[in-house]
Length: 95
Picture 1 (cartoon, rainbow, N blue to C red):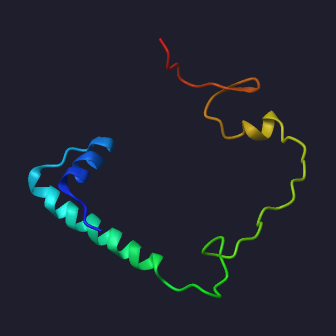
Picture 2: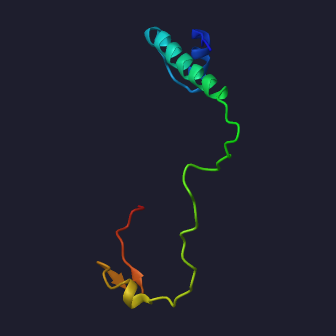
Picture 3: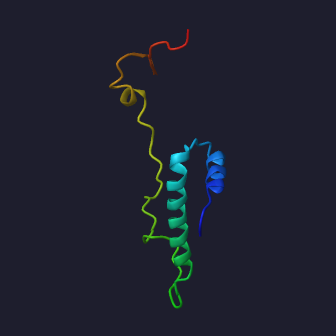
């Protein structure tokens, strides 16, 4: 399928890209080549081939969600550079 320079300009406009005149011809050829390849794939005989839902076998690798008691402020604030009671102290960022 041949892509025209006008179509490249329209695609570039939709993608908010600026393409110089020197690049248009190269882009036309590249897009045409890609579409020709996709057209070849559309004509491949896939009779008897099972449809696939993905490229890899997928299974759930998540562990069971088991609740645990919270460690408490002594553990969570153990490595805090500065703390005040049960809170982290951080530098003020809003003036």
